[in-house]
Image (cartoon, rainbow, N blue to C red; front, top):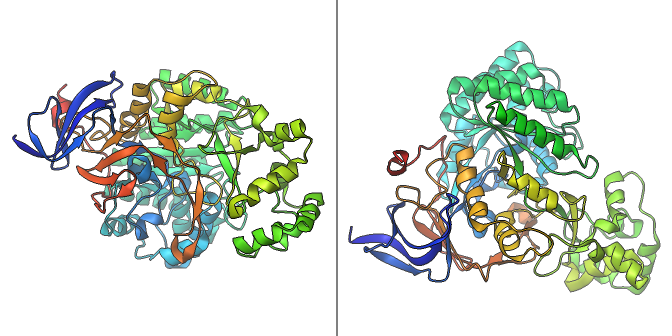
Amino acid sequence: MTEVDIVIRGGMLVDGTGSAPREADVAIDKGRIVAVGRVAAKGREEIDAKGLLVTPGWVDIHTHYDGQVTWESRVTPSSIHGSTTVVMGNCGVGFAPVRSTDHDTLIRLMEGVEDIPGAALHEGLSWEWESFAEYMDAIEELPHDIDIVTQVPHGALRVYVMGERGAKREPATADEIAEMKRLTREAIEAGAIGFSTTRTMVHRTADGDLTPTLGAADAEMVAIAEALRDAGTGVLQWVSDFREIDHEFGLIEELTRVSGRPLSFSMVQADVMPDQWRELMRRLDGAASRGLPIKAQVQGRPVGLMLGLQGSVHPFVTRPSYQAIAHLPLAERVAVMSDPAFRAKLIAEAPEAGHPFVNSLAGAYHKMFDLGDPPNYEPAPEESIAARAKATGENPDAIVYDILTANGGTGFLFFPLHNYTDFNLDNTLTMMRNPNTLFGLSDGGAHVGAICDVSVPTYMLTHWCRDRTRGERLDLPFVVKSQTKDTAEAIGLRDRGVVAPGYKADVNVIDFERLRLKPPHMVYDLPSGARRLMQEAEGYVVTIASGQVIYRDGEPTGALPGRLVRGEQPAPALRAAE
């Protein structure tokens, strides 16, 4: 081997196994890593990584690009944050299988649950499919920058089999359950990585209706678990309120026993049930001790709402004066709001009744923060709008008003909805350190008007490994392993997530000292000109996917080596014998 495609020279390698950082060269050829250490071969391209960090590409197991990947080649924002594999089809929502009569039903479901504009979905989706296998074929026809993995969404499956009865959450008959089981197995055998469902009251359609899968009978869920057992592969992904925790967790355990397959569920700390996560961890650890392959997906920062005039929600949405101008373009709204008389009138108004969530949010100034630049996702209580108002004697509404209207109305406030009950991330740290949890919940591609957590993989390095001042930090090898090897193996992708010979050549070269998040901002690049929150980072020098450089210093190269990954992938032969 005298010449290879790429050699990364002299970087500080954190290889994804949890091992200590070491200086090493990395040789890449034909989409695979072929040598690590001192590499004598020359690269057709040589990347000087001296003083830089070299890691595997991130494997993000919780995204919602189900629509975007059918019309767009770049899987942004995930790919600009070093992710080289994303798993979508989470939370029981997606676009296949589907009958032509149910297109609008699935769009309204996705729009409501994941805050993806219906107009963009109506214009962007071609609907050149009916079965799940045909949907995967449609994804495969379009080249992408990074790899895509998908799951069978329970909501779409239920509507396909039961029609309007399924959408209305009616019980499935024995024949309908058998058909859901057959279709699930068929999709898994065609290459879906697993099956997902949601059982939370929070998830609703754009019309405010509960999701089709809420309260689905145990018999229905067990039959789907049997489909994975019969296929001999796949994973289960689960979202629940766990309000009936004995039943819900018992059902999770039953599904893993029946299927023999791994299951992961979402876990956050919610203010309304601040200690539930501790009970879930106790039960999780107990299940693991009994050999059940159950994990909890956790996020390393608050699940935070971005409150702004460009977004889906802000504290003035239900004020009568604002509602009168809400239809205007942003620039015109800001011009009206710049009038001191309008400002005084709006601030003096009470919110209109009938919007309990928005109105409770609008008054919670103790959990509302100016996000700043660089963004601060672990703000101290004394930095809240309430604390600022108390210190200065100002009306908190006036402070919020001025932040939101600044810079042409592009300002955002940060509202930590989950994982911030105690105003620090210590509980999140406990979650992340538990061996039975997985890094996840970035929600890339979703909540595009209110949440921008897709940058979590970058934040894990900047905040937890370098910048945190309000408590303990995490070791870099632990963080890298947690969002590469661990997440890849959790869904059966054993061919990636490690920088070692034989593994897939998905690699980040990072200027760790310069790495930083930029503030989120709104762009209007979805079909129909619909909006979505975007967030970039500085410090990703090179991102390589399947052996090709796809980004240099944050800019796309035009290379599109990504593919749809069908099913589990075996470990490389060079590593399997170790």
